[in-house]
Length: 286
Image (cartoon, rainbow, N blue to C red; front, side, top):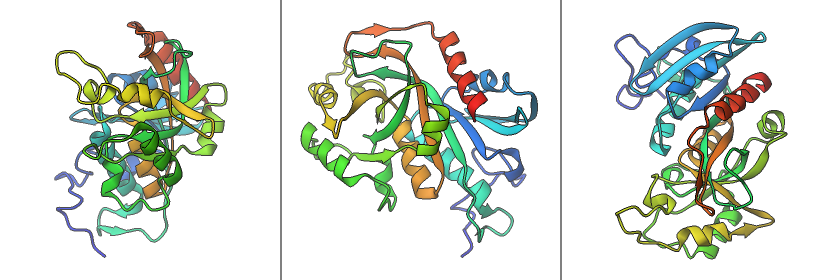
């Protein structure tokens, strides 16, 4: 079935609409970052750079490291941006942009998100590297997709029951990371369960001037335990990446530098060197 132009728009040049990329511009191994400034931090590690393109907050550098082709792409912040980037990356490898038809053979991408996060566990100090074994989405994004077999339904039920999840909030979803990427990229990092929120302040339990409707939410989340797994950190992209990767048939992993501890109130304001160390690990191991 041919995909209508309105459903998968392209630039006048023929490139995919938001990313402004052609299929040949991306590698099979992709490092995703929220901050466009981190794309250069990644490509500085490359031996060669063949592609540098951008549109809005979406920057792409593709090159090689030790003979292996890698792309670094910024998504911007939030699950909504991740949804755009994931669908367009999938389209670049699995849809013929000339005929606008799905290719007969599926092509799989390996995606590692590198970012920052806040710890929900008093044992993890700022500066810790943590890889997300699971992502729990509080954003509701995956509920718009047919995600049968993608969501860990038993874990989701346990989370909803434990937290007394309010029916006015988006229904959560729990998705597992790629075991292969977890073992290959993050074998020496702490492992945990990452909460993905649809915002930075109230959705993550931060009260500044706007009062919280659910002030007890973080305490309930922090005490959640499912078969020995508990919530370790919170950010704004992981679960969306995991969910869409599973829906579209790709492999995904999130690795973060913890820059805050929500339990102790600590915050690490200078984490540039730590981020570069984490990027170095991912680039070398990809």
